[in-house]
Image 1 (cartoon, rainbow, N blue to C red):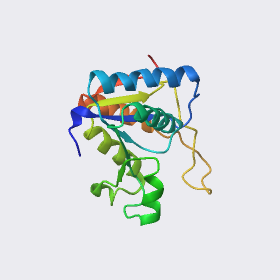
Image 2: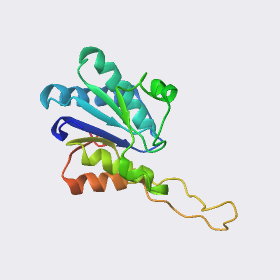
Image 3: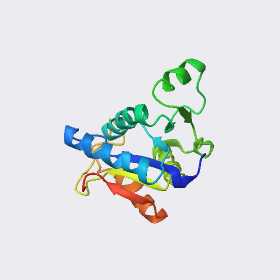
Image 4: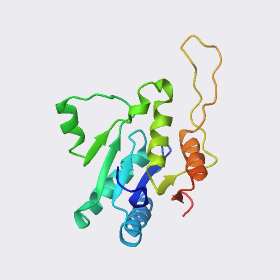
Length: 172
């Protein structure tokens, strides 16, 4: 992995309202990182509308800044075949599965996010402190449901603890 000082990761809630204004602000922030901070590597997950928006914006910026790299950090499929690799490489410049995640189980997405944070200096997020994920049940047979923790909040807290330069686009 390249130097963390030139790397940015993205996190956000699964469901957000994607607007032209949000996309424009995001483009301005990312382009600023490329020009002013010399960021050239962007790490992506894949489970949120914010992830998809960030990938779209970085891909658009890659036309102007062809040296930047889009890296997909997989939380699933430690071993992938050539056809799936080719599919991913249509959108990303590289993909990998962090070795330490093989035994992560249900915590795979949390561990993947920590991996991205550990290898970044900047973090662009879409975090609303009032957001609560939909309530869930552990199984179809459960009579009670529970309120899961927000993965974005967990990633945000970890990124703060690690001292990353964080831009919360929800607040900007």
